[in-house]
Amino acid sequence: MVHHNIVTPLSVGDLVVISGKGRGIIALRASSGADGWSVEPAWQIDSLAMDMSSPVQSDGRIYGLSHQDKGRIFSLDAASGEILWTGPGRTGNYASLLVVDGAILALTGSAELIVLSDNGKSYDELARYAVAESPTWAHLVPVDGGVLVKDQDHLAFWSWVAGQ
Image 1 (cartoon, rainbow, N blue to C red):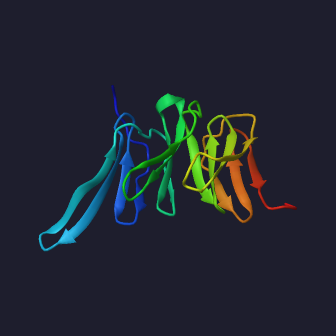
Image 2 (spheres, rainbow, N blue to C red):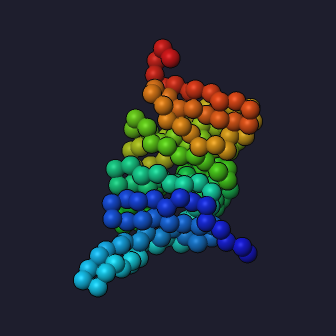
């Protein structure tokens, strides 16, 4: 099996969180001392891993998409690595994640925009929208009052502000 790392490392406080397909999720802590810099593992999770979707963080929590179970959104406590919750499987093999206005947005490769509560306690799906007719592999772009969604042929503005 060939391993690859596509996930962008995530910095949370003094931790750097990394992952790769089939490699779990690892948080590393870098520190400097009299002898220079050192890196030590802070925690590791073997039951989840990320492949193509980079995680985001909010209020000490990490949100990501594990490629296992054909795609499962999850939340972790950044300090301890404790799994706070996992959502249902079959979300897909890719999602662009974004934190906005107390919510987590997950745009799947199959053009579904999933809006989750940033409550940190449970998978709480607030809404789900079909946002395009072709695949959406580009990352969500936050703009005033909404997000830009790019599919194969179009760029669309999606707003959550009334009247726009």
